[in-house]
Image (cartoon, rainbow, N blue to C red; front, side, top):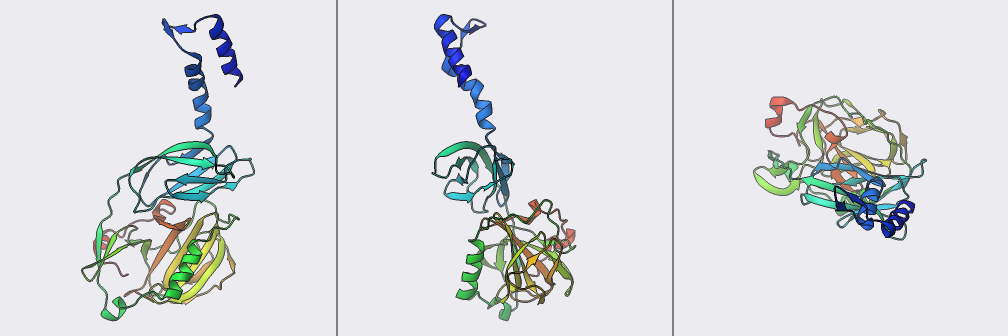
Length: 301
């Protein structure tokens, strides 16, 4: 670095002082260089709750980013930099961490700090009829969903802001710990439930490619859309599907209709946002209001 070479030369001829305190060349170089280094790659937001998404951007070429044992892809941008999405899971441990930005060969090109704050999620009991509670996912259902979540495509179809799939308020928020008929399930609510009458059209929250359009045992009529570069959404319990796998849909396009299929005992829309295979809070992506007094009532799912 040229400025550091100049400082080193000056140090050999005289002592650099301010207020009678000597600043060694190495320390001064570190102070001068650190702001530029810190700006190479950034995370937004820098302080985040469990179950939310961090946006990553680099002014230098980086192909991936790592947080503990989670690594996500970064994608090249027209300005020569790269961008990506880092999910923070509900089960992650709060604390302050370093996100490492990596080159193709795995070497670190930059790092940035992220603070995950403690986040409390309430417990919610769901009353299910015996025949509905008895429903379970088949191995084939699980495999299909796992393959969908594990696929990250290169082309980005989505743009901010996303749009709500139906206009209803939130009956059950993301992250609540679920009980079925008073018994702990060990599950969290991995999406949100929106109030909606049966038969209301369901709209894609962003453009993308339909990967799944099937009836599942527990999820009911389901559409899953890959929006590209790590962002995916799923729409569950629909009574009718209006798209086929492989179709490209536009933002706001009708993909199905609200129902009560699968493990549901009333019409509503349960929908999910996955970021690089991890369920995250849709309310960070779309502004939605709670149903107020309905919030305290048992969910319809």
